[in-house]
Amino acid sequence: MKKIYLILPILAGIMFGSTGIFVRTLTQNGIDSTTLLFLRFSIATIPILLAIILTDKELFKIDLSDFPLFLVCAICIIGLNLCYNESMNMIPLSLAAVLLSLAPIYVLIFAYILFGEKITSKKLVCMFLAIFGCLLMTGILEDIMTSIPLFGILLGIGAGLFWAIYLMASKKSIETGKHTYTILFYSIIFISISLIPFTNFGQITSFVSINPILTIIFLTIHSTFSFALPYILSTVSLNYIDSGVSSIFLSGSEPLAALIFGLILYSEIPSILMFFGLLLSIIAMIFLSKTNT
Image (cartoon, rainbow, N blue to C red):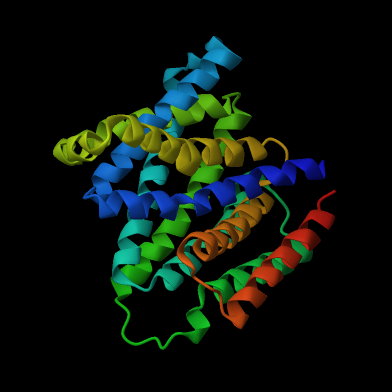
């Protein structure tokens, strides 16, 4: 495996880490969670559609036998977003992030069962170091935890499971000869259609009317950088590195990026433990790259 391909899940994680910037802005302007998801997914069809046209129009072709896997990918994408968003409303944000970062554990187990990928001791050590670093970065060890709703915890775990299953399903689609763009394009079409009954189009109209040109540009950037590109990069990475490694790198870089964005844009200065967690995650990813040459 060429180490250059490790940059793909890292870039995807950085882009995912920027999602909070867009979510905060849209929420502050009266967009509810379901409408926000519809905007993210429906607009994301545009860059993916352009990518297919510029790459190979044959990628539009699919068989009826492909629909089950596309549907699984679609369910996982929307399930991940809904579970994660709801868990953040019920439990501390730091705990929700930690629960989501458990995805690499599920991926390694699923990859072993479904694809026969080896779970080496080095992978396990690096994975737990990266996750522990993420945990420190959230600041959860410095919080005084009181009563936490069990349902909120279950939703957080569900978000990690949905993300892990998506990686497995998309990898299976790739192995059957489907391109990344094909998988994403039809998955988000399923998602967009299913969200229409739950979308408040009045909220969209009100937001766009603020400044049509700027808001449309903002919504396009939001969908491209917080969804389309990171999903493309993370799925493409499965062509070159195994799903466990890809998930670990993505899970490590996403909270790193979120911490940096918070520091620069919102003056959210990390504590000593959070900064140590950042360094620990970086070290874990470096060691992981050395074990997968």
